[in-house]
Image 1 (cartoon, rainbow, N blue to C red):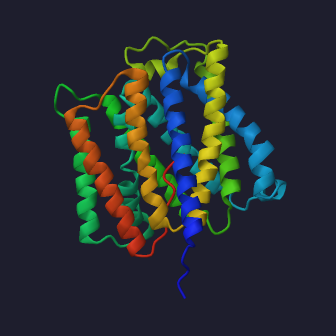
Image 2: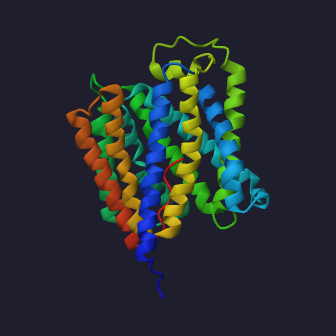
Image 3: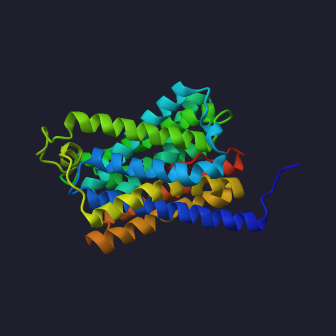
Length: 318
């Protein structure tokens, strides 16, 4: 007999999904706000310290205690952590250089990237309709990126690379999900962020390479700087929102049907447009609006096809 989610569970799943997307949007906004005054590795390191503290104090006790941190797949956790760290770096650098709505829209080719990778690496089947959706999503990206024109920015490739790296991370997740819990995977991702940002900071945190002409390079190579009290609140928000977003999105798909919860993730688009207008006075241009419609539409169609085929939808965010 096929299990059907209770209406009450679906409602709670929707609340969790929307809350998770709001958390992730706060992360995007916070990174964008801090990108003009601090180094990326400094922000990530401080955010990871906050995330680890919150994880140990709140998430770990709720997730089963210290025993869940034992793992039989350390190599897989290392590989998964490397993918997600690199994906976040690319997305955050893109946020530093692009309007926030454009960067988020390009990143939402993640479902399409995962579908292609599932064919290549997992031997799954993608029908002609889903291939058509993939092509439309890529057309949407091209409309925003505008390669070959004067409006093209190399930084617009960063969210697309981030989406590919997230897809690779989910390929690893599919391999280990039967033996590793979400709490376990979350912990090792936080540790990977903490260690990698500390190492990068030790090598370039003195600013020896800063002064790049591009906002993304400047964000990457800037020297560590004293954190103001106001900005410390943003970093605290980044750490807590990131962990809570990951936990809430897991709750959303645990409580409700994937086909019901998945479309709520696309609430990130209007929220990112709102942040762009409210904080940075930027509206998407006409070509970006067309690209957003194609990317979101193709992504929603892919999610619908996944649910119709009875496949669980992976979690696309950090």
